Length: 177
Image 1 (cartoon, rainbow, N blue to C red):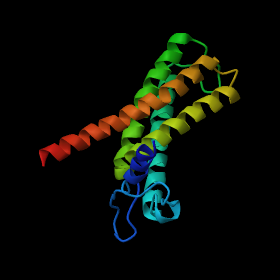
Image 2 (image 1 turned 180 degrees about the vertical axis):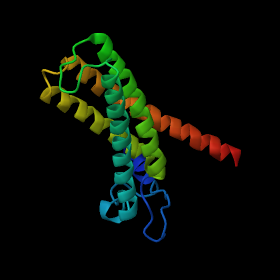
Image 3 (image 1 turned 45 degrees about the vertical axis):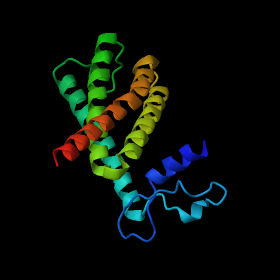
Image 4 (image 1 turned 30 degrees about the vertical axis):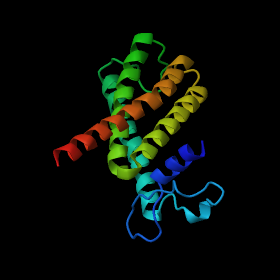
């Protein structure tokens, strides 16, 4: 059990002696000797890059979702902003394009986060699920709660799919070299 934990920590650790981000193995360190003061999880630049990548993923997803909402409202497909939406078919339509946009946003977050792609994607998915749930609780009269619950349930798989697409792209790029 300790080895699994140490492997996970070592994937995101960097060496103090190296000026750039590098991975080193701490598997030879005994769990009794391991102190977390000697392990830097993220440098300040890596942390800023991670935060900005997560924000970029959220912003892209929000802009695409809001833009599509506006286009559908202008076309008369969705009711005007502020009006309740209770039609199951329209809610499933909104869920489907939002899921696609979450994949795109998480792919962008992974692309910007580079070595921290998994962290960015997982964070984006967990925060996205929380936002879906909070939105459902605060906007009770505008849509049925199952819509927010479905969005929350789909949030993590869609962001993980975006991360997987990024990983496949990176594998393909590495194989081509």
